[in-house]
Amino acid sequence: MDAHHRRDALLTWLRGRPTATAAEAADQFSVSARTILRDVAALRDRGEPVESDAGRGGGLRIDVLRSLPPVRLRLEDIVGVYLWFHLTQLTFAAPSGASAEAAIDKLMAVLPAARAADVRKVLRRVVVRPGLATHDAPRPGAPDVLAGIERALQARRAVTLEVQAPGQPAVHCSGEPQGLLIEPPLWQLVLASPSGPQLVRVDHIVHVKVTDEARFALAPLDDLIRRATRAASPPLRAHA
Image (cartoon, rainbow, N blue to C red; front, side):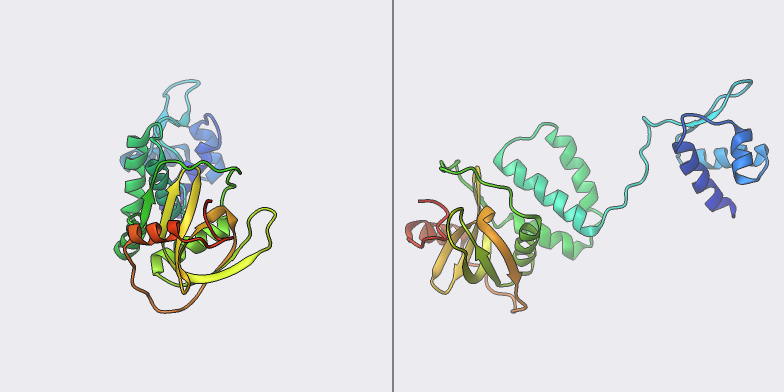
């Protein structure tokens, strides 16, 4: 094992125990205690929070208050966290919002520029209005449904939806997702369909199939919502 990999392994090994001596570390990695101390110095130079106590009874340890182990995030994990936070902020002010936003902006900074721009465009297609009384409590949208809606909104692709309200038979509809209307606690998909714009409750969507059709033009969202609210189109109506 070369010095670089040994130091990374030493860091991981130290994180797994409250304290250890240089002799114990030397035995673990089959090197001398002097080499371990050089490794510790090198880790400190690169900013790792390794502490050591000299003298009898001393040892090596990680200052857990200064550092957390690295977390590997997929690109979609970052996108999901960003959208969840900002959509939540649209409906109510979350505690520690400022510090959370700063952390999320750091995550977004590592995304490819084009991907980050697409994600931010989704938020511009969200309308929030005062809460709406509903006789049934909305269920959380299924993760695969939410992922399909997100993909369709970002890529501007048409969808085929299977929709089923409680106690009602399933129905199918197709159209172009234009945005989201949030009237807490209801989340509704604004869908431009051949029969006119419709509002579809997200928690009533059972399945989303995203088509490969070319990008479509986005229409003014407020106008679509106004027309969909006036139209009577059961059972896809978001509210009575």
